[in-house]
Length: 80
Image (cartoon, rainbow, N blue to C red; front, top):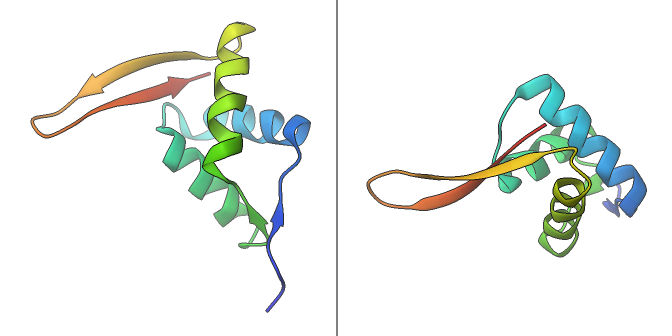
């Protein structure tokens, strides 16, 4: 089994945008898991990299985030 490689920051931003474009609004966890799934589990997306990348994309105006809540939790959701 091949060792997972970390995703570089510039590539991660592009992968996030493509994931949101194809799948619609997702939580950060869903975005990370989808990128790993599409790569055939060859890439690893760490929480320490996905949240700063999402924040940067939001500050640049590429994505919009909003808090959604259910009866048990409140979670951020991101849309391209």
